[in-house]
Image (cartoon, rainbow, N blue to C red):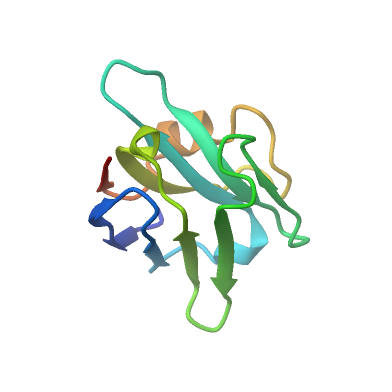
Length: 128
């Protein structure tokens, strides 16, 4: 069972930037589908972005051009750099890894949650 530890997040004004960090102490992240999803009150969870074992990164349309996912394989750590933040980005952000596959599919974080391979969540609040 992989333990994912998140850090970063906080409160910023619209247009600001934040970086989230997700460190794995178990699964080797680069071998699987990994990424970030978010959950805002009253809304469904949604994928922010994913990266597969080949390094292919995909983003939700709502964050393209503003958010960047990167990884440090030596540190077994995943990052989410968020720029030009908007109030609608306000949510709890989670990192997760789907250890059942090296390719990312639409239900990737559902499998991660069912296997317990997701972080504790970090709050991001963007004020207008």
